[in-house]
Amino acid sequence: MSEPVIRPIIGLEIHVQLATRTKMFCGCPLEFGAEPNSRVCPVCGGLPGALPVINRQAVEFALRTALALNCTIGRLTKWDRKNYFYPDLPKNYQVSQYDLPIGLAGRFDLPNDGGATRSVRIRRVHLEEDAGKNSHEGLPHTRVDLNRAGTPLLEIVTEPDLADGEETARFCVELQRLVRHLGVSEADMQKGQMRFEPNINLSIQTGGADARTPITEVKNLNSFRAVQGAVTFEIRRQADEWRGNRDYTLEKVGKLNYGWNDARGVTEFQRGKEEAHDYRYLPDPDLVPMIFESSDLERGRAALGELPLQRRHRWITQRGMAETDAETLLADRATADLFDAAAAAGADSGVLCKQMISFWSAEANARGASIAGLGVSAAQVAELATLTAGGDINATTAAAVAAKVLVSGRGPREIVEVEGLRQVRDENAAAQWVDEAIAANPKAVADYRSNPKKAQAAIGFLRGQVMKISAGKADPRQVGEMIEKRLTER
Image (cartoon, rainbow, N blue to C red; front, top):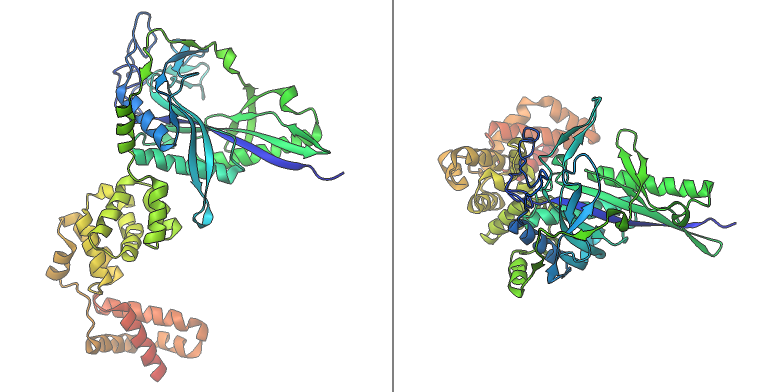
């Protein structure tokens, strides 16, 4: 009997916490880590008679995202009550959108290696409110914190177009980059601001028949590593289950909810999955339907700007940037804008990119900020790159100048001139420094002459000594050539 042909079928449900100041239907502020139950009012607490008011900014953020995902926008959208009972749901229903979501039938272009893309279909984009938070760990009872109840969530649902765990995780990375670029969410997964729920099953073709395994939804994943691990494990688990029991099919078992045990690297069964009719959706009588005018769509499109995938393509094709460097800079929109502004100011793109992902990035990491968050201007960044590209300073000096810019606020050129940091290209001075370094380091000279495997290391060591002697003013390339020439002559 031939081996079965197994094809994974993977879709995603993604919950994105929107970066509004207040909750979805009340004025309670959103504040991560606040004292439990200190950000609650009669509306989000579900008290009788409290009436909700729609958060306009959350609606604008949802519209902007749906447009960026190439969705068809529903001109009329309404609110529905999704009924279920859980301790962290104070109203015993969740306000969501069922049959008339904001966006339908979209498309997200996912970049692959080599610059190509492929489209992942977006089924729907809709708004809803989050539930509260239950705590069980180490307690003989459940603690309920309603600070999160009523937080505006954007739910994005894909069609089952993803192929494996790696591609699913890459989709999540790109979607996080998009919502951050749009300014609609901080998407900090450590704070629960972006959560992924992959739906996985298999098409198994054997003997002319096509069996489908049960659809498993893995709940509340909050890291890209967990997404890839859970999807990869589920594919293997479902295939093994089917091989052991040919009745392990969607028709006979149904849909299932699983959790991810990160420590063990396995999924664990939780419960059967509800269908839409189990939630008894009904229109919310306290919230009016929303109508989007053409002017709303125009404002939403104007707020998109150049999307990350478009900018990535432009950088790679027009500026010769490596894909990995482009992805690093695209992680923060303000930093990407800073790069473009500095390049527009005349900086060499190659030098500028290298400096941003090296010492500017290191300075940002040390301060727990983005590069743009350092407060350095595009003119300062461009000037430093120009000084380096022109040979006025070397890379080591450039890093030192960057640190001085952050402390003093002065321009790089001023620092170089006032502190005498300009690179010296005088051959006589360089020759004197090289001779001094060679005379002081006979072991490096001996290594160069006696062991070909150590030759380059010896040159590198002597070049470093010259840079110390010259206080960083020597031209490293000129010095390296001169050292090799001197040692060859000897």
